[in-house]
Image (tube, rainbow, N blue to C red):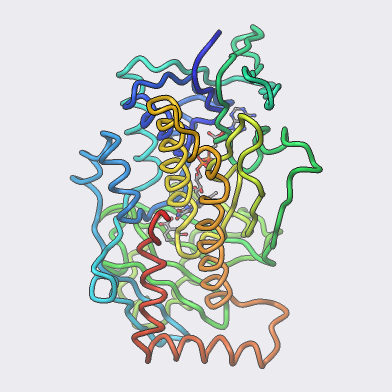
Amino acid sequence: LRTQVAVIGAGPAGLLLSQLLAGAGIETVVIDRKDRAYIEGRIRAGVLEQGTVDALSEAGVGDRLRREGLVHDGFDLCFDGDRHRIDLRALTGKSVTVYGQTEVTKDLFQRRFAQAQQFFLGVSDTRPEGLKDARPRVHFTHEGRGITVEADFIAGCDGFHGPARQSIPPEVLRTFERVYPFGWLGIMVEKPPVSHELIYANHARGFALASMRSQTRSRYYLQCGVQENIADWPDERFWEELSLRLGPDTAASLQTGASFEKSIAPLRSFVAEPMRYGNLFLAGDAAHIVPPTGAKGLNLAVADVQLLSRALIAHYRDNNDHYIDTYSQTVLSRVWKVERFSWQLSTLMHQFPDNSPFEQRMQRAEFDYIAGSEAAARSIAENYVGLPLE
Ligand code: FAD
Ligand code: DHB
């Protein structure tokens, strides 16, 4: 089988890349080890930057997003019960949109299937090969048959555990990593959100986040131990703990109920360099992970893919390889800034088991500085709404 760009991974990065390339008449084959229902049901991100909304709209998948997405002009930071609103619109002129990753992938899948896109879903043994050859290949097994896709380029959009990054020779690849000594326990519940905007709270008992997916569906997170067991967190315990961390004023308006999803995610910062090797390009979680505080993971994946599609379109349409040659450098310069923001907000908002009293005072001082200085608040705000592409 022959195509122009073989895309490994049908998460937001892979699907959007395929969609953007299709818009320029470039053919892709998209491969994923999971099936469509599984990918569409994977509950993850919830907050989209304006640039992400624009990119999805330009790709032709913005209609439902514009109809159903909730536009938020601010969010709250809360420290030991003291709440401070970051007014995104006043500080930056921009806002963010609450719209689940599940919905983004549904919209993209629907569009790609309507255009008879070629997919191989539920594959196994994905193996990229010949990355430095003019015709690199991806081998995999689909419905018991061995298949090889030969392409001009391979896009590794296969997430943190995928094979694309791992196919770059170890002497070329450099990785940078920080693992945080806690995780996030998340639940979804069919109840109106506690507040009409998000609340990020640091409390002596740990971090808590009040988020949402719609006016009637809430998403809450609690900082927890990495080794903790979901079975030890029945809903009643979750609500009790969340109420303590949000404080009595906020907890008074909390509507509790039976959760319909509950999971624990570890927190990690990770960057792989370079993001291009021969004719392989990495995009999204395949190349980098941010801790979730600040909601950057999905947005970063979309930004990567915007730059990658520009590079591939310039190659095919204008015979111009400038953007291909500068892809890794351009993307990484933005990635590191977003890594910095996610690390900073995570460091500010969590309880670290090894923090000394000095470091605890530093957290408090940083919160007070943000609450009292427009410059400090604007710095948070401009990162939260999303940095420019370049
Ligand atoms: P993925 O979505 O991981 O997609 C990769 C795809 O590759 C998958 O479909 C996978 O099945 C496929 N794949 C893997 N291995 C293979 C293989 N061997 N062969 C073929 N296919 C393969 N980000 C935010 O911006 N805001 C948030 O609020 C937020 N919350 C999150 C909460 C959780 C619990 C998690 C886990 C992540 C969260 N993120 C959040 C991060 C965000 O979900 C990711 O950054 C985003 O999914 C990245 O998209 P991607 O397409 O790069 O990777
Ligand atoms: C959500 C997740 C985040 O990491 C975040 O910063 C905000 C919202 C969410 O899943 O709703």
